[in-house]
Image (cartoon, rainbow, N blue to C red):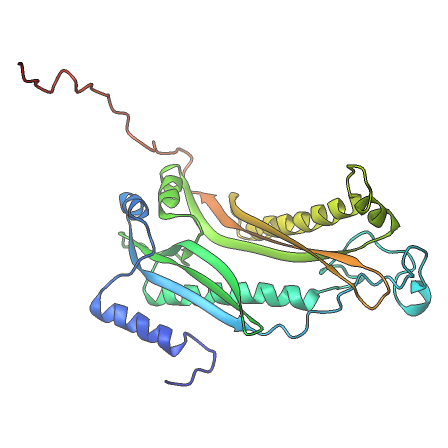
Length: 304
């Protein structure tokens, strides 16, 4: 097997693309409904495309909120370089303390590299877009494998777009969008983390016998979800998109015990969806109305 320097497509992927060009066999991940739906708006599948990357995340950043305290009481942070008063929530983009920033950057880079290689395969097939993209991450001997997989499609017109569109919407949903006057533009994703110190109030609420809100955890979760939503909105604005269809928003919470003599909680969130743009002011009807005719009087019956 030929050695790969990390540029362009891996040799195996390039061989698969060359084989598809030579024999004309088109693979697809589309369902029957999706294939028919895309065909109704002038798109045909040209091949299954995939991009992946395996990353070793060896350095996640300092896993603490930065408060150098003693459990429930006040802290020494002002003297030791940390915080004398624990801040509410610290995010990876906070200029005061970038907890877990290397880890967050590695996750974003992993998804971005996988999508970039998927687009390289789509461009090699002469595709106008990729539909039904699925993003996934799995563990591989301590490393992480990021994968993006979907179906490349091509329009039945002589006009080619400036860049292929990407979407995680199904072929059927893409057809509905086009008939309604919208076009998928780009698959967007946002990932971020935030960390919050478990102060005396949080620990008291968490251990309470009554049914009560743990305000610190509510604040942490609300913050990290707000950050990823804001990131998505900024990405869509840079693309000059008219809207965004969210397909998934995940949340994971875990606790850490840094070397600061206390406990913190970390929340990470991933948001994925498709930026869309309007290409006509008037939507086309999605379906033609048809008269329903009862068949009971049309079927001859045998008389006994």
